[in-house]
Length: 184
Image (cartoon, rainbow, N blue to C red; front, side, top):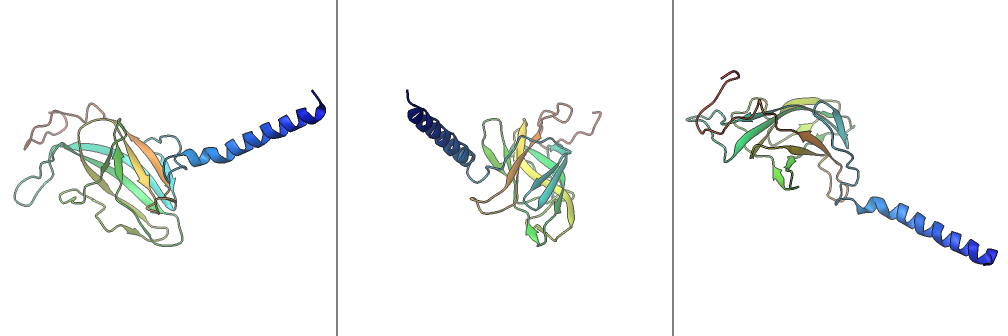
């Protein structure tokens, strides 16, 4: 084989490798190609200008209501967190999703009445401000991942996942209208 043919073969192989390297990042899930490994509770996770720290997860059988307790369809999961705006402009924090083990997404509930420190629906965070609060979901007890978002356009949205494991000491059989305290 001539040196010319060997050189063309190397150039073709180089071009193929270069094309693959450039196209590989575009193969990620829609708009969330910057999603890295699953993070753990307690870690600071930056998503665009927002810095989330997921502090704890609590399973509740009910929430306090005006006339009577609010009972979930499955079980209430409240997730305590802090969110900091590290940007130079005000940012609106979006409603978040939980992702189950089958990769189904469940949107955060939009009525957190009865939840202490609920983030609320309007979540404007000024530059350099940190908001403490709770996200609320109505889901079956299990292991989940919290899908964090910067609230950007779908094509440019930055996201990250934080593991929300089911801790057996937090889980108890669901009994409507019954609230158990630790140690019961």
